[in-house]
Length: 93
Image (cartoon, rainbow, N blue to C red; front, side, top):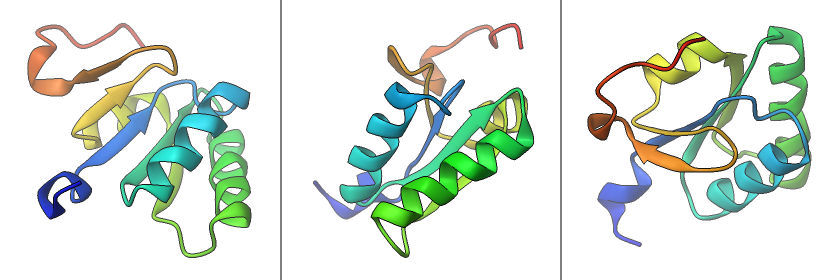
């Protein structure tokens, strides 16, 4: 993967479960910066800490869903991935 792709951040909306954990660990391992989103800020922080437990020093943070959506260049809802520039309407959060 080229250095430009590694500079993109990926947000996972609703990413505190096992699917989100699996996506986050794979993307962090590939060098991406990951933001795990949740309705609960505390759960998002715990999920990010869990990823850092597997990959110390990983570029991963937790936040609520709306800031995660707004700050990531690529957004996943744990099932599908979309580049934000392709999204014409923000999802209902």
